[in-house]
Length: 120
Image 1: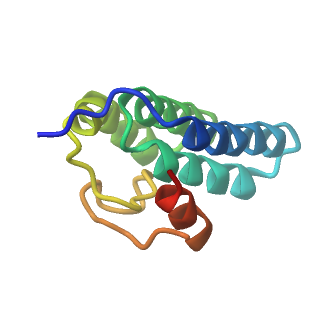
Image 2: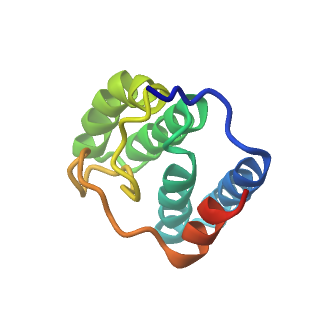
């Protein structure tokens, strides 16, 4: 069984860039774009417990800000199980992490992120 503990440097850089874009969009009240970048951070970081959990934490905070009860409760559940599922490498690749999709559904990975995953 493979255990994921540390995100590779090139993925960490891409993950951080998505979080930076998220923050910029949030500051500018571009909420749809902010959420888009949170989803991308989730896709990039979902195989790594710390990044995966942090993406869900930000999604929870976004749901609270948006007064979206479904998102808040969905993110609490994802926070409880997401990190350990990353650790044991049992995650649905490509899943965007929001409550608008089932938590165990694999989804297509955007081409640019797929390229990142194929880079060593």
